Length: 430
Figure 1 (cartoon, helix red, strand yellow):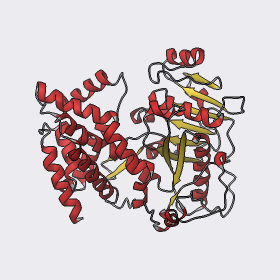
Figure 2: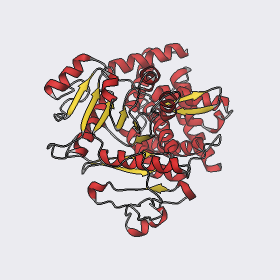
Figure 3: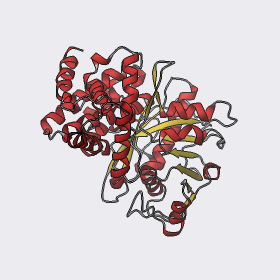
Figure 4: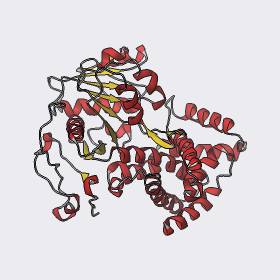
C-alpha cells in the first residue's frame, strides 16, 4: 500500500517512546512505502507548555461497559506492563454501585468483560466528579446519548486531555451538517467552563473488546487530532502523543493522524455499512455479495465524507480507523449480527411498516442479544438518512439509503442487492 500526502492533511504514524520513538525526525507519508513502512515523525517547531507528554499522575475512564472496561485494561497495561508499582492512578467511573464494588473487591467486571482482571492501581467510583478530579487524561466511553447531561456540570482540572472512543454520529438540521461525538464534548466542556479541555482527540480502530485485553492477541487504533496549523494545533499534537503513550503496549499499538473529523466519520459510517452486510447475511447471501458491499461501502463512505465541504482527505481510509475498522465491523461486528437477526425476524414474523415499530424491533433484538449493551449502528443510519434527505443526495448513495429504508420504512431486505448494484454504477461514474 502506498500512502499519499495531501498537503497539511498528511497522515502521521508515530511510535510511542516506550518502543523507541524520538522527536524531531520527519518523514513524509509517501516515502513510507519505500522505507519499509517505517514510522513517520511529526516535526515540532516549538515546545508547548499546555500539555506534557509524561505519564500523568491520574487517568480517568468514564464508562464501565465493554469498551470502557477494555480501555481501562489497555491503559493499565501500557502504564505498567508488568503491573509493578508506578505513579499513575487509574480512576474508573461506573454508574452502578454493584459494578464499583465488584471492581474494587474482586478486580473484575464480569457482566461486561468476563475473564479480565484489573490491577490494584485501578480504583472504581460511582462519583463522576471524584473520578475526573486531578486527571490529566479523561477517556469517555459511554453512549453518546448520555453525554450532554453527564458533562453539563463537570469541572475539569487545568490542561486535561479528553479522549472520545465513541462511534456515534448525530445530525444538526439547523446547520445541515453531521455532528460527531467530539463536537458534542467540546460544546459541553468548553462553553462557559473555567477549565476547558486542553484538547479533545478521537481514538478509533478495528477493536473487538475481548481480544483487546488478551496478552496473546494484537490490536491497533488511530488517534485523530485537529490540525489548523496554529499554536493550538501544536497543543493538539502533544495531547495526541500523550494519549498514544498511555495506550500503546506490545499488544496494542496506536498511530496518529491530523484528521480527527475523518476518524470520527469513518467510525460512524462503517457502522451503517455493517447493517447492509448483516441484511445480506440474514438473506443467506454469500461472501461474494458481502465483500462487494464492503467495497461499495468504502466508496460511498469516501464520497459522503467529501460532500458538503467536509473535505476529508483520502489518507484517513488507509488508517486502522478507516479500512481496518470497516472490514472488521462488516465481518465480526455486533451490528452485522443484529441486522441479520432483524431480517430473519422479519422473514419469520413479517416486516413492520412504520418507523416506530421498526425502532421497537431493533430495541427488542438489542436487549435480547446484547446483554443490555446499546449499539450506535442503527441510530447512525437514521441520522445519515436525514442528512442525505436535507442535502438532496439520496440517489447518490444507494447503499446508505437502502440500509435506512429496509431498517425503518418496511422495504424488503432483498432490495439491498439492487441498491448494491446501483451503488457500484454510481461509484464508477463519480
